[in-house]
Length: 190
Image (cartoon, rainbow, N blue to C red; front, side, top):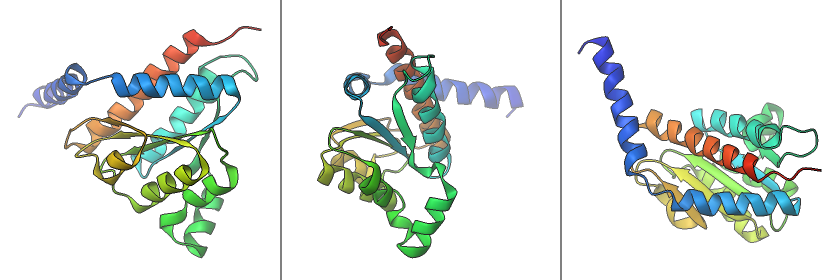
């Protein structure tokens, strides 16, 4: 296959996922994020590998990009962002608790958790959802493949049934950017 054809095929695959997607779950997440923002709550994000990178990227967008004014963004924290905390928890308690333990300390009733996962089956992600539910934290997921355990566990699953990790991760960022732009339109001046 010619190189240009390879790239065109990838773009076609991504375009097909976008064209066939149901955006109702994104609408639910957008409304919940707006309520948390206006209520002074916090949004937590987590994922593994590329999804961890996406969690950090989107936390940045929510802290500053939604308002573009000092002190007006969403209180957002990417749980994979602190390597000292991650390695401490992984070493002392196990990798499967690196997110749930952070949430237990930093989360509050009424906050929001967004998990990003291709498979939806990672133990650390599943444990974070369980922890959030015990604390009254709303749970959302952006998932690929079959959605895994997370699809059934969260309050709102945004599921893209694509068996391609890169496309699944692309969709995480695309949804995040959709949310950021919509939330920017909802910002309050003053």
